Length: 185
Image (cartoon, rainbow, N blue to C red):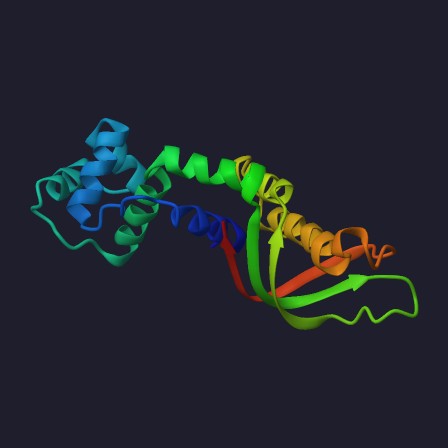
């Protein structure tokens, strides 16, 4: 599970104008239409082609939990690509992204300052350039650790240094033990 990647996806999915298909048959038909063959869908979902055909014809209605999860994930990943692209573009150019987190945050700073890690609950609006960096890194297949580093950099600049108005000597922000993480566009 990718905490940061899934969080970014969930934020973008809130921009959808129509709900994604809910029933297994409708989801299967959507994927067949997208991938243009039952064989391709079967390979992607790791089931037989015959199984896909039976879902398409509504001969099977209730998938196993693991298949249901894969099916939903694949449909949502392909649902409304233009709306998804517009939401990302808006966040990366004008809107920015809001991060709401409860995590252990601390920092590396010169001797004499209170750099003690502690659990904090923050809701911080990050500027568009950080939204752009997060989405670009996600699209390039960056690891969750890399996305976490970008978010920590953003929190350092926006929250701890207040855009350069304080804590100028701050070196590094530690962002660990994440209890809650949510993004909002």
